[in-house]
Image (cartoon, rainbow, N blue to C red; front, top):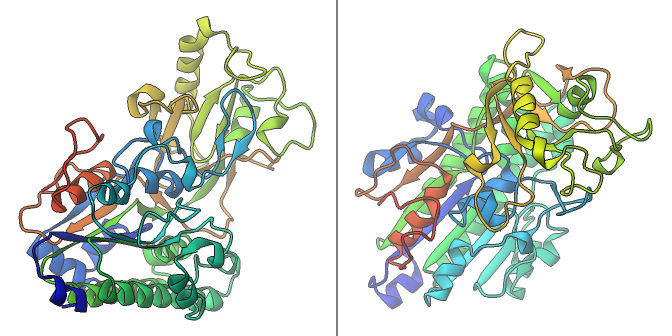
Length: 448
């Protein structure tokens, strides 16, 4: 029981949400001995597999998880989005999220929130009592507020993210050490402020698991050199969650959730290379390396991950697909994507989804026309730069995101996690906090 809990009593319900970028439910279910804390939460409350969003990319997932809204409302579709009416692209940051976050709704209701390391939150908001923005922040000094938090993190070897470049090396020793040090320093900060702060909502995100899984998942699935290293890393993660759980006062409900799962990566797939070879895309010069280099004859282009756009007349600056031919052209591209096969003869696409099926809201203007949810093994890249082939089996990453393998654990006996997805997390947290909201405020629903 924390100091402030003893002082304030237990009258107000509180929630601690621990987010994990890339925790696979299948990994937890198949290795209960590695995850005693998460297994205990599942026994005491509920723990299940949930779906991610489309597309299952972290930069789009975190805004949706923390708002309960689809990308058509958040306005964030990936690490790279395009400007309306332009071929220019930008990297979405916190101010590009166009709908309130769960902590905004809590603070509007008069509650206090501490928010640590959530991706796509830079610059930090001063409406919460403590906040450090997550990855894509320029540096720790700019990412943290107030001064006390900034000074503590600067002096404690806290890191905003794991150095992914280390994962590209054949020798993974330095990468694993950096990932573990990042995990441990972040856990120490979480444990400090869980215990010391008088918060109603605590939100802390571990992003290192995503980095580790990208580079070591092949070892896990194929019984490779670093299989036990991956499990040991996740055991340390579970142990940190256990320490946080033990420190929480009795009036706090612990929620642990991930943005997406993981599966084995076999091929990096360069979608724009495929479009060019299939006659959908052409460039104005031989040194093409960006969306702005496509020429007037291009009918389609792609942004990561698996987002396909038609070059529509009147919508894109040099659009060539007449609006009257939009449906016909989109159907043609959808058929081509559905029949696309990899070097192993397997279909690249598990599903090809039309924009109106998954994107709704005031910020759907930059939504892709089609989104491919890939089959296991095919990691869809944009690939604007020329490539020797469409498929590359020699990349350093051996793990890729899985849409249907995210995880949610709620330490509350009245929870039912069934047919749930990422959009259910925010309304669930608000229900646990007794914060009112309208029936149509979210694309998801409370699981309590």
